[in-house]
Image: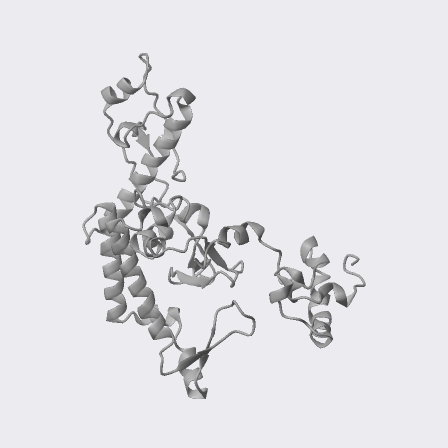
Length: 341
């Protein structure tokens, strides 16, 4: 097909331009295509982005990296890019996230629970940005997710199967699953909805209102409205989850947000220190392990959060000297917040 010019209808006979397996795709008839030609093509011809203009029948560009990461999962975690409340939900992998949502390629309830804890919420509010008329928080993955120090042994780079018997993980998963079940029961009460199979096999069932009155009631049952109301059962469910996550960090359940934020920052900086030391050591010595305390070598670490204080971690210099050959001295350096391993 010529760029933005004449085309053959047979080229776009498959749903979404053939992005999916044709055996499981919806067929478009010429009536459907006529609507696309009348309403979509004129707008896409004016688009400055080559991919959108040349392949105007596609919703957006393919995301091969995201599809590859989701391929081994049955579900993944999603969160709005901009929202009043920092909420995380489960999405079936057949439902792809748009640019307004952040997709997190994890299917385990432990990661879901850690992200939905008040500790990650506090971190994301401090490390994210704000947008729009309402100055709503924006979740920026590079500063909120990638910098967040997950509990030791429960980090996203570890397959969930490796910690499924960990008591800390079990407690987090149980409370996270309960929170999710309670919310779903409120969003779609059994007396208001029924389910029916999707037209295309292999896709999630449709959840539909039982009647007109049910449809009207369901329009008011959104997660935003739920968290605006914040009923006691929701508060209790989050408190239970937060207690399980605090235990995973080794903190008291009633730790304040300020104290938790300071500890999270310290963990982030410790892990940055580990990365720096590992990168600077000779390859032949990298197999020799060192503890986190031994590696807290930065004499001054600045907190890049408004109103924050510099944290000056102590160091057992004798322990560090024993690990290094010769009589090299530690040099002072100032470090910015980095993504933990």
